[in-house]
Amino acid sequence: MAQDLIHDPDAGIERLLEIMRRLRDPDTGCPWDIEQDFGSIAPYTIEEAYEVADAIARGDWAELEGELGDLLLQSVYHTQMGAEAGHFTFQSVVRNISDKMVARHPHVFGDDSRDKSAEQQTADWEAIKARERAGKAQKGALDGVAVGLPALLRAYKLQKRAARVGFDWPDTGEVIAKIAEEAAELVEARDTLGQDEMEEEFGDLMFVMANLGRHLGLDPEAALRAANAKFTRRFAGVEAQLAAAGKRPEDSTLEEMDALWDAVKAQERKTAP
Image (tube, rainbow, N blue to C red; front, side, top):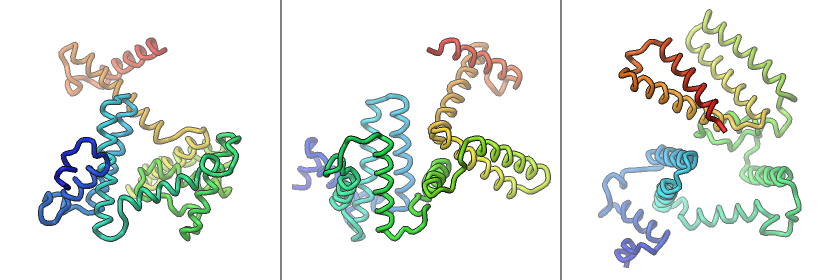
């Protein structure tokens, strides 16, 4: 019985699928869940993916278990809505990704040799994906780069796609020169133009910075996450030092906080392995 399935802790994915089906039941389900659609759930899906990444970054494996469950629930939520609308089912989604993984790994599941470098396997992977895009009638080199990606990550992927067809600077020197050019244009926009022009030039500068990261073999999204973490850690150190003196940031001068910032930074460097 469905009720037994819902309360069976060992029933696995079938239990979760039945729970979601019941939550979405138009007669007996949860009013909030019944009202949701793909668009309203999508932000939660993105949020859960970030929470998975956060747990990994902190090495919190107990929390990661829970966050992976939350992310799995998002897939189940979308597939339940897809089934209700007649678009797809959980099983068809599983079949689709399984077929894709088998097709994209002929060196594991087929007759191709595994005696390849990681670089060659990456090139083969990209060639397979290019054939898949052609089968989907995606004609342009940039087709299929998701619009909903974080802007910095999407910039990186757009540039990577363009580079595959030869639209790229040959070395980092030219990218750095372009950064200087874009920075000068941003200053000009600040001094002589309006807010819209300033925003455009700022976006151009960020776009080229992402390209520099790609040329240096760096993931700009990961680099910025690391910078965010460093800023958070150091500012917390400033707050701790102020608290030890009975003060808060809003009660302190910029000069005082700058001095504490430098002290925190120096201490970090001293204790770094």
